[in-house]
Image 1: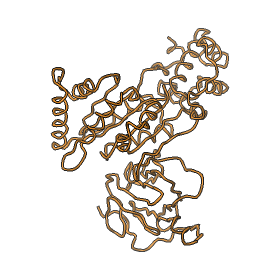
Image 2: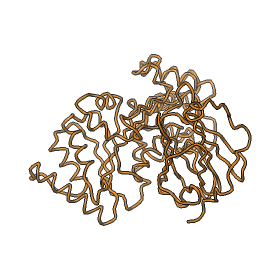
Image 3: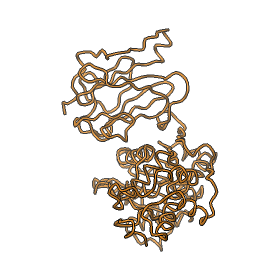
Image 4: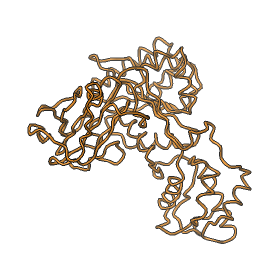
Length: 425
């Protein structure tokens, strides 16, 4: 095709999912981090939704490729099936030949297998793509599987991914019990205009552009207007435009090529199927307590704040609203602490209207409160949590409003000497 003309190693805009080409926008990185959280916890489902072509399947492929060898995965992509066919599909993914088994035998075999793998020290994960097609009866089977326990601990980690209809289905009254098992729901939005630009350059670079300008600067705005930032549509338009340029023996794509591609594809300007969702991240809270997902800050007064400090000096300040805030070493976290003493995803703070809880995410160095390593801790106003060589000072705005206090704690954080350095492990 046009690879030689553009001096590339491979086609940059193929539609088939390829983890090598994954572009991690802020939302994609966050969705990946939430999927990774299933490795740490078995207390509920993670649900990832997004429009057709937003990159869910590529994200899942990348996540699965990076899993440790002690994680055993069953991936289900064909979801228009009966409950018996579903159970058979899961067993097939785990290496069984269950086609002559009756439903009761399927359930017993699967339960025994899950418990056996757990006792052998393996983590077991079920990933279902296109989950919006699952019938309520099959979703009930998924819920029942999520309840399999060994020594009072759930043994199966579950990720459901699908189009926005999945969220609508989960909100139906008949699936209330399953909905209560959802720990995290996250909607993956389309790319913004700037992200669309970066996405195109990223794929060209992976394909071998070596920084050469292939798409002229005045092409990106039109690409965004006609694709809405949906990766699959971007790939289709860019591939067609590069083909149009190659026909004219040019190694750059100009606006004329973009419009020629749009004409050939018979496209009109993009309108999102879900209206205003195109450029925003929607995250719906689960039903109860700590099972609320991380959400964009809502309007109004924050429920609490944390001050991140190092050596007694404030590094950053973060307001807490209902939802989840993940703290760790990489930029994909809500709060990044760039330190070798901090794990990739170190801990999280879960905020509800009534309380905030900090929870260790199986980090190497742990979290400390009053020099004691803790797994969970209900945060109280003034608490100091040590994370490696950093400290978090927790300020409960609810308590301050109740007592009529209006103190914003500007400047350096004042931390008690007993905070510790958090490196006792």
